[in-house]
Figure 1: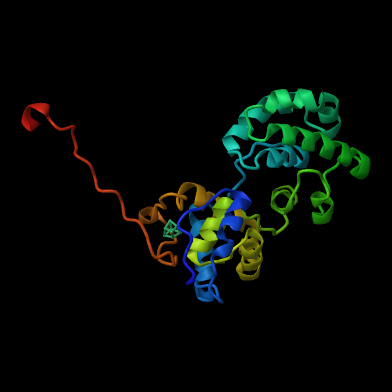
Figure 2: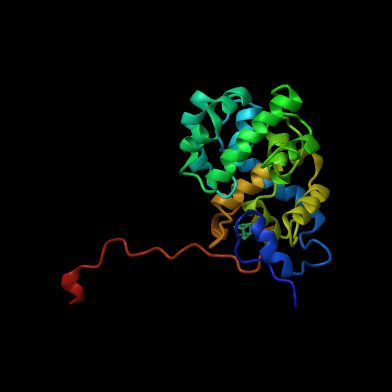
Length: 255
Ligand code: SF4
């Protein structure tokens, strides 16, 4: 089956599972010479990209990231606004307890499992790390509810490490543009790490995520206002919607 650009993104790692039958080309279709310019253009419109999750330190970031799996940042921020008023440290979270935590996050998908994991990871931080969030991938991924993507976000945002977290948006943008095609988030992440010039690594995942969230949207990318359009290899680029009538039709003239 010939390789095709995925037309639509899915949800998180499900995207990779859905896309596993898609055979990527042997080489990334975006030429090496264009990669630097690709990031330079995204950086020009957003020089200091930041997470849209609200947090105050590595621990509150970690909790927000765990809550954000298959949920929007907006819904997480709405819940954590009150949660972090009563529990901002691992000890306070353990004291709040699973049932207490559940009452704050009921509006977020998978809240039962997330409550269980957050209490367990908070206890693990107390038991193994003196209540601090470790700046270490293996230690982070050993925490309940923390996978590779979450670890990448924490390492990058809280500790400034040049990791690239691949969520559904980054996965879609990397494939559509030809920047780093891959069948799974891990494959895309490895290609992004291999192709992204060092100066861009620190903010690469935010640029990709925000570009996918607001411009290169899943259902209909807005190619007509995209700053990387000239570099992008997606073959089905969209044009600006035709302008509608300036005024609603006059019923008297249409009868
Ligand atoms: S040109 Fe279209 S498909 Fe390519 S990155 Fe921009 S919005 Fe996405």
